Image (cartoon, rainbow, N blue to C red; front, side):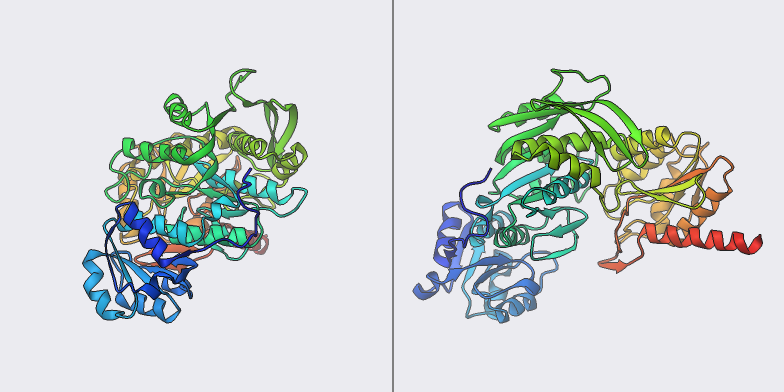
Length: 528
């Protein structure tokens, strides 16, 4: 879709003086210190807020409550030509680095975002940008798209930024934030352009939209999947209205909107989406028929390890399969199909991608030597995702004992500690509460709150150590005469626990489950 520049083309970077004029024009500059005539003509090739990635020709952004002047010193040693800061730090930083121009901002977040886009040469004009938002399903749709685009005729694929990992053609690592801070975001987009990838698929969080991380980003296709109550806390969104409005902002900077007609508040979402040049609707509702949406599904049926369905659009009706369990993944597959049709991807590539997609930590089926016992690893972590997950599990694994293992994160999303026990209790035979990124809270306290919100007739246990909790779930599963499905929720494929200010290495849920299953069969053999 994007024809402004050719992918991989050398961008026209800006100068320090031009960035000063940009911020002044936007009313974001309080003052500039130490900017001589020679310095104003200095070429700027990027912006950073992490001194570890600072480079020659970059502007360094001094941000965060834990910011230390040593970070600026390190960035300057790496070649930063100037820095952006807020007024409260200006005098201290001037004394720290008197030989670098200082841009003092009136609104640091907004100034950082606008400066970063310009400093990195607006790479969004050279590549296609797909932005996906919603309470549930962002990662799955992003991986579906990436898999489809990787299998295309050119094989050039796409970059991805999301809650699981980040890949931009140059850098590849496990993500910390769903949507990174603006200097990092624009660096990844620049890397995508420079690596010759034609597209970046990114999850766009409500926090990124609320706090202007993606301001000035041209989004070619914006997809809104669903909306439910989540991320409501003193440090996130004060109420649902703020959360919802933040999500809706994605359409203010998009060309094409893809919207599910099946979600709550669909009419409000569609009304906002009409600000875009074009709106494409999707529906996977049971009994959907022609005219209900632009892209819709029929004849949905589970198959071993996946879901088959017929997709309908202006391209006609064709059979497809997504290689993941979970009936709700038809919704996600339809979103991917609609986005690909907008991008002009061939049907054969769409079908092949969906048939081979794997999303780390999303509806990963772990089977055992006993056909009656298996596990599902999934990132489900809020009420809406629980409703979809357990509803599908109860149908696809009917008759088996359902063992649900989960916790709740520390320092945020307080509502989950009430909503998740209540929702899981509608479906699970046994709940095991355990650790899940406790941050600055005690795991014992979080689990106690969840236990207190558990219905009186629900069987549950509290095992704060997650590996020990998984071991207990495996023991219980093999003891169930009817067989069992162990639901390992929220952590997915993650290899770190957020404890205090650190991210501490840990085993994945899948690895722990496999080890405990092997131990079970070893002990069973020894007993036999």
